[in-house]
Image 1 (cartoon, chains in turn green, cyan):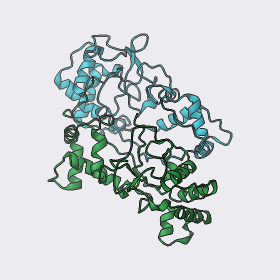
Image 2 (cartoon, one colour):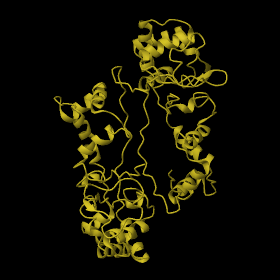
Image 3 (spheres, rainbow over the protein chains, first blue to last red):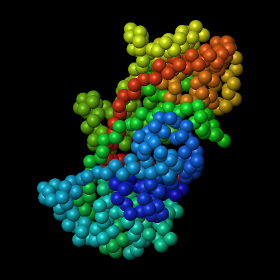
Image 4 (cartoon, chains in turn purple, red):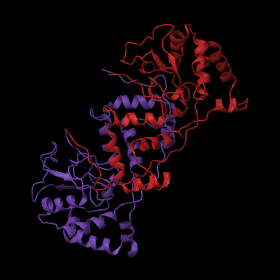
Length: 238
Length: 238
């Protein structure tokens, strides 16, 4: 098995690269992948387009969104998914702190933030996603679970730095999902990326800060999907 | 493959039997099945209980719902799922008609209702679910797709009559999902169950009535699930 740990879609609009190997530049491109990938949805682009075009309610919604002259292509369909994904942002107490509210973080969270910066974590976990760029992986020491799965990064061995937003909710950690506790993940990053030993106290402090990156998620109502028509392409079976 | 077509969960509270072979008497019992079934969630009852008990936010919610003395067992967890499922009911124009609003159905829908009754459809599609009891299957003639899949009903060859509520939205039809249009499904039922030939006009009329069984679905907000703890059991891999 590949042992690939699906990155969260929350805040993924802030990544500079999509997928763990960064092979996709943005969400609209990324969304074309899993739909077509055989181990995932296995739906060829033309089939996806035919399905949407066979359902009058979908055509009406595309016209409402893009105008009557809309050309409903597979890239347009993926782009529509990406438009939804762009709404999946989760403002956190840390953002309030950055916006000037000094009381938005507790004393312990501020201490953890200092440790986070002092230890060098912020050299890779950068930007609005606090992650999301391509970085060399395991440059200081070997990742202790490197033997699990077949993912080795891009051609240079670079791996996308995952966002730290909502990290307390997104175990397991790393591309192969082999580490389950945040303390262990913090220590492993110290070792493999920074070449330092992060002790128990510092890991605990950093973990407290990371909790302040847990954000408010948008309220999403389950959609009432339109019914298909007699011309909707049907699945085939072996 | 089994070629089993998952019945809709909407209005399933009104069934007298759960699963196509009716082996389960109610939703609370039914919900224990897919969680444990190896081809589905493959989660042993004890593991499910351990997971819930390892997450403080879930324990708090159980106490809120059932009182501080709640015994969080696997059956209690399944029962909680069933409680949610019981809310998935979809009142339709037909219900308004039954409640005395003679204008709730169009003239064409009323004509279709008459045909539905005249042809004998209502002899099996009974009760509030307009279906949901165990009935002999293919008693008048062989089901034309009987060769697809391995499901043959219960020990007597009985099959659960599916609800007709929202039937325009729940293609494909029958336990093995081999028929995709409602007209064809109506005609096949005439043949296999009633021993009559339903002509194109009658099938079209019945289909129009069935459209009046499309109901208003409850608004459901995606839940914000609580985060796990360090003691939450982790999955094992091969």
